[in-house]
Image (cartoon, rainbow, N blue to C red; front, top):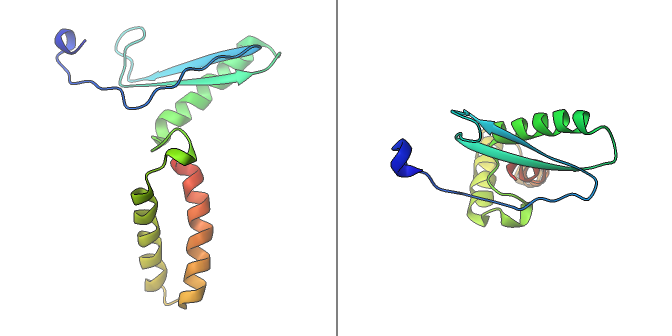
Length: 120
């Protein structure tokens, strides 16, 4: 593909998805031709519901995943250095507001817990 389209390409993350009942929906961002684009996302939905509705929902979810550009496929895969960088930014912002250190620590722990959910 690199020789054909003249662009450097690499695969960052991949997972195999399967379902017994339901669908695996897909979304390709900046699709140039069928099945070829910048970012591809798969979402597996396990359900016995209407497959057309599941496919539409799965596509919407996949679009959101592509838009958020997650750093990891799951929380265990997050780079500890990235977590510490995020903590340092939050601590610096809280200190600028003049909050006491013990309050800052509680604030940062709460925000980090929510932020980590958004990072993967």
